Image 1: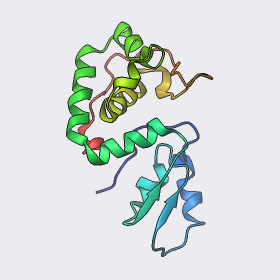
Image 2: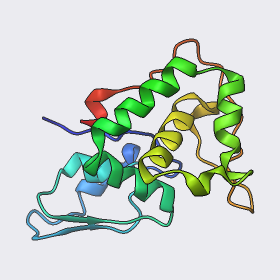
Image 3: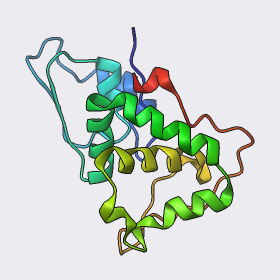
Length: 152
């Protein structure tokens, strides 16, 4: 089974996979990905032994929650799906402005990010100088917020 990235990411390597493969060794003991982003190369290679990292703490937390708490994450995404609207999105987006994010669990934070990436403008992750998410709501008729195949 081929794994796929759970989100697209600015600066992603998906379109460069063929060229990147030309420069990779045929055999290696451990794969290191210092800037995993959406994970296009990581998921394409599906290494048995890997270390991934990224500067974005919310992104790394999301990877950890997909690995460690997929069922709880899906349950929360179902709640986001049921409540999805522009007003709901703006409220979810505002939790890093009003301090509510400090009381959220890691899995709640991951669900928040995944939800926003599914419904915001162009699936973009962008924050301002105060590290506050600032992407407007997208105009999707039926966004796929819950995607069990990508999470499980």
